[in-house]
Each structure stands twice: as C-alpha cells, then as structure tokens.
Length: 534
Image (cartoon, rainbow, N blue to C red; front, side, top):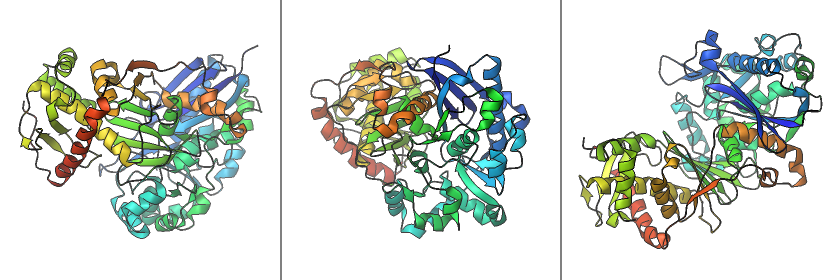
C-alpha cells in the first residue's frame, strides 16, 4: 500500500507548480504547467498582460483555474495516488487579488465532478483579469491611503509597510474608484493564495495573517483588519475580505469535487495557503535569528525577527510558521546585474579574475567605500556610482581590485544596515542562508560572512515556495499541539556550511558600517553621480 504524502502548490507568476513529499520529506512527485506555453489560448507573456499604459499588469483568473485542472489531469494520468494525500497547502504570488461575483460561493460549493473546474467557474468573477504584484498604476490611491491614516510612517507602523502600488488595498481602491458597480457586484475578495485555497476547499478560504500583511490593510500587531485603512480604500470592505486566520490553520476537508473526480480521501485536509515569500521562508526552514539572502537579479533578504520596527523601506510581515514573531523582507534592485557589470569592466568578464581581485584586497578595503546603483535602487532610493576614500572625499575612480571589493562590501553593508533599521539583531546563533547565482562564489560569501559576523550556509532552494507549502501542510496537522515547523522538518537535508567570519571581523566592520550609513544619506540627498568607466 502506498505511503501517506503531502502536497505543496505554488501559483506563481509564470507557472503553477506542485510537489508531493512523503513522511520522510522526500520529494516523490513534482510537475508544473507553464502558462504561456501550456495555455496559449490566454495569450499571456510571462504569465501576464501588460496594458497599454505600461503600468497596469494583470493575469486572467480562469487561466489559473484551468492550469489546476490541467496539472491534476497530468497527475492522474501518471498514476499518482491521490487517496494517500493527508493534507495540502500552497502559495500564491503576493499582493494579487481575485474578485468573486455575487452567488459564486454556491457554484464553487456545488461544482459538478463531471466537468473541469474552469467550466463551472467561468462566470464567477466580477473582474476577469486580476491585478498582480507587477502592477504600478495606483500612485494616487497610495497617496490617498497614506494621507488618510496620518502619513507613510504611520501606515508602516500599522500595516508593516508604507503604501505600495502593488499592495492589495490600493488595487481594491482603484477598482472601487473606477468601477463602483463592479465592486458592488463582488461578494468576496481573495488574495491569489486564498483564492487557490478556495478552489480546494469548495468554499471561500480566509486570508492568512502572513499574506494578509502584504495588503496595507492588516494591523500586524493585533492581526485584525485596520478600520481606518479599510475605510480609506472602499466601503463595506471588511465583509468582502472575511476574517484573517493564523497561517497554520486547518481550513477544513477537501471539497467532495476532488474525491469524486480524482479519488482524494474525504479526510484530506486543506491548510491555509500563504504568499510565495512567506512560503519560501518555510521552504528554507528559517529559524529565529536567521537571515536568508537570495543573490539573484535583485537581491532579497528574508529575516526572522522578534521585535520589528517598521520603516519607510522594506516590509514587515507576520511570520508564517510562528504567529508570535515576524518576518522582514528587503529588496535591492541592483543585484547580480551590477556585479556582472563590474566583473565585465574590472575583471575581463571572468568570475575567476573577479574572485582573485577580491582576495588580493584587504577586508575593509583600506577605508574605501562605494555605492553602485546602475538603476534606481529601492533601498535606499538612489541612483548612480558614488565612490569615497577613507577621508569621506568623493573620488571619480578606484583601481580595479578596489572597485570590486568596494562593490561587494557596499552591497552587504547596505543589507546589514537596512536589516538593523527594521529591528534585526545579529545573534550568536544567527545563520545566513545564501541562495541564488552568487551563492556559488566562496570569495563573495566570505565578504558576506565578515560583514554580518555570522557563518554562511548554502541551501538548494529550487521550488522553495512549493516545498515550503508541503512542509506547512504537514505542520498544519500538528500546529495546534505547539509542535514547531523546525520539529516537523528535522528530516529535511541540512544547509551546508560554506564559510565562517574571520577573526575580529565585527571590530573591523562596525565603524565602517557607521560611516557607510552616514555616507548613504549624502548619496540619497545629493544624487549627482559618476558613471561606470567603460
């Protein structure tokens, strides 16, 4: 007889992915549906529609439903045994929203197992193309929201973030402002995550605390909707959102539709779905004090944080695996493309030469510091290349090896400074979990380790949101008995220790970090820049 297993789903921007793990946490099945390629009838590019104003970006809701039909049929024809699935959970691209038309709950609940789900639900959505995280068309709604609650910092103190154009509250305000009749026709508004959970539940699934804290609507401390934020966005919004729930909640058994059509056990449980970033935190198995750094096209930091101090930059979200704590998210646009540019200019396009140059210079770079923003940075909002010598004087050029070290040290100092602004503290037990392209370069990781004064581990995070969802499905079944996610995932492969900090690294970098933070203010407020010398 087949062994019990758990499913993790990821409704991401370009594809729908699924992973099944057994009780030993081994991946026993994985598959995906690629929206552009496998569902060409929707004519998306990269899973989305970019509208003529270049600001509005949406995805067709029915494409997501049809992708689910398609992947379940693929699993069925491969012989996958659905009857062994004990629980499932999932992730959705953060901030996107789905608008259910009045009367849709009954249609969802009574969907015929004779039909694929997308046929039953085709008339269920009052907005057929969902606004998603890439949308930046709500600048006026953001201003109005911040003004209504007493300013950007006050909004961040309530909801964990200042107003962002992609955040759901501002998107809802835009729909209400432009199409009040469509808004009035809507009986429920879901996030992509809770919409996906609803499909499995056969009822409207609640929004979980963690993904809910990416909406500019949830009071992250009390974990209830903020009345002042709701009122600033649209009337009657609280009823349309339902009550938020802890991220580990078991929402109920799977809808009979799936038992009848695919042979799921009627006892299979649906655990609350969450956002893709929170699910990745679970997939990377972060623990208290840990930092995950994804060194990709843009660099992203996930932090497990006890006592956050929300700021005008970065995001504080409720922690998806421990409802007493928080996670912080920081994004830096100038990531690998900036590293590649300096590699091409200063190391003949060779990572080996780049690494040798990094090793040939001393930690601290003899006091030379640099800011490298090829495109307008998010954290901080600045652009251009800015170089300073040990006396804080601006210089137009560094020797090549000094440039290379200034870039890498600067990128990591910025990450530590902005993490600490959000309330993060490096502890004796802190681990840095590095992933993404640059995590394969030991010399770069050594600088990261020295700047943070913490050991760096590497972790394979292919499909981390999917894997995190499968882990959360297992955790959901036992979370009420105070078992932690860390206990549940003990059997998962451990991250590998890559480097440890050099002796006296903290002593060396502490004064440099203070200087860097002061110079950053200069760079933000005096944005005259030099350019990279070709």
